[in-house]
Image 1 (cartoon, helix red, strand yellow):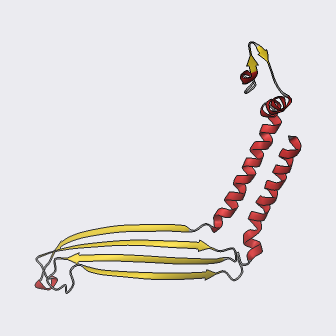
Image 2 (spheres, one colour):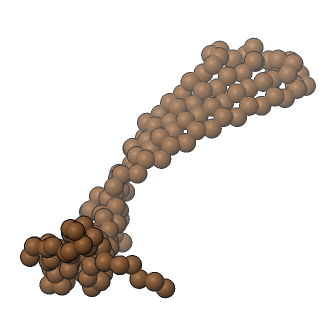
Image 3 (spheres, one colour):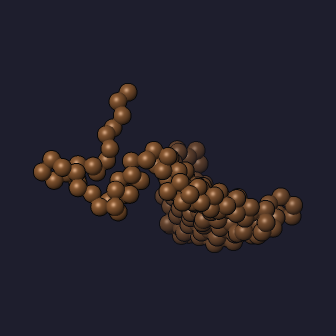
Length: 170
């Protein structure tokens, strides 16, 4: 395996000679130090761990849609048509939010449309819709601020440790 050469070194070559100020020398040394790069990646990884721990409290949106068409021959006049044809369509949308106290809130809506060629239908097409609210509070498991915020606090402390390691390495 071949190692890459130093980065940005050719930027400071003028007429075949290397010309650097003290600040530029320090910047080149830091840019090409493997330990500094490793500590920088560790710091970035710790930052992503904090984001991941916080993602539990982000709202979640779920949507669904369905359609069903049916055709069936009728054996009697009570079906309303010789060949009964029906169409049902439904759409739903839910929003769920998990709070640091362990509470889960849900708000949702659904709408459906039904149509048929039956002569006995009063409303054709017919629509129905609903709105629902949900509230869930665990009594024992995941109850309280400390239990739910502990992963965030641990990730933040890991971030602080990796930041301190990075600064001491630099």
